[in-house]
Image (cartoon, rainbow, N blue to C red; front, side):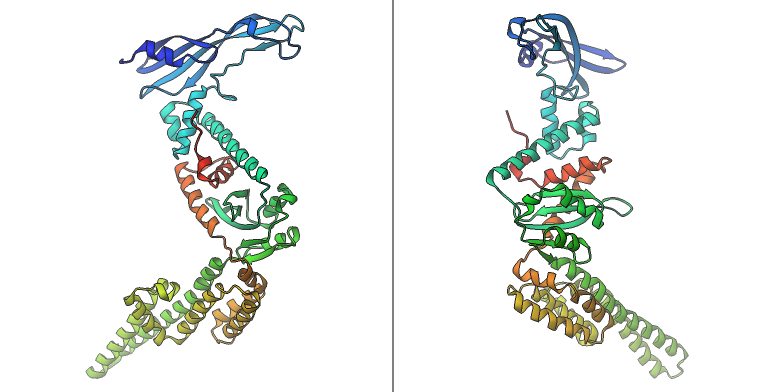
Length: 450
């Protein structure tokens, strides 16, 4: 074993505890290093915390604290001998404060700081447990305390500035397999996650308003959300002064799925059916010339089927972002399919409606768009327009407050990464604290170097 015991002893002496030495224990192939500390605190420096009277030592005790290993595969512990005192006046007894010990744990403060740093580097609890030999429950406790301290620091900072959120967004995300969801509320200006709660129903979202000070939400001007959720009912009930803004990306995604996707697949299936029918007729045809022509016609129908099946992302992408070859393929599809062309044109027009910044103009344009969609004669498009027209107020609000749930979608990616790093989370409260912690500004995400 290569180490300088004297230098180790000197570096580990701190506060009122003096490092007395180190011993190395080997048992069944496992090596353990124990650093021994002895309290040097005199009774003259101690007074009774209750009556401030003089005290005397009534016992010596020992506690074992886990420490960060200095060598790979070698467990490190600290044996701390401390005093217990009794007051000469009120006879109250109390133990000496052990500053080496991290509160609520059996680890050293030094080990706790190391664990915080490793967690900030996105190491999993399991990996830190394997590295240090410290129980995962202790590591989780240290992590929870660290996150809560950072969240409290952020609360004090915002309160000192007199800050109140004005623009919010609410959305859901998956927390477990089997359609298990949670609801998340974010401040769009500062980027802080204000609240996370289990479930995505109205009764679950109601807890946000029950657990948040109404005065803190008194200056909220607008809340962005998915149109298909029922969150708007609670926002209108609890924040009557705020506008409900429906997220453009959710609506565009639903249009692409329920309108463009359905019409595209219907047209594709029609070509596939025609190709099959032509092939069957060609098999019974006796004239070679006619048979050849029918086979070519069937091949053309099959090619149209294939091009439509592969055109999903071409139809969903904005026209100005298409590569030249994709633009040519898009034009071919639109020229050959009038229903797809109508849906695509209305998709492009719908995207432009979200760029309008005058609410009156936006309302008139949306009404005209809904009318054109309902009179198109295309069933999926007319059904979509009839369903969304009742939500026109939230669509018009986007002109005054052009906000979306985009920041929450970005946080969802960080949440997924955290779940993969941690191999899932059994404790939802711990997981929700982690989500709120991850939304803090970057300087707060790292431990302070003493």
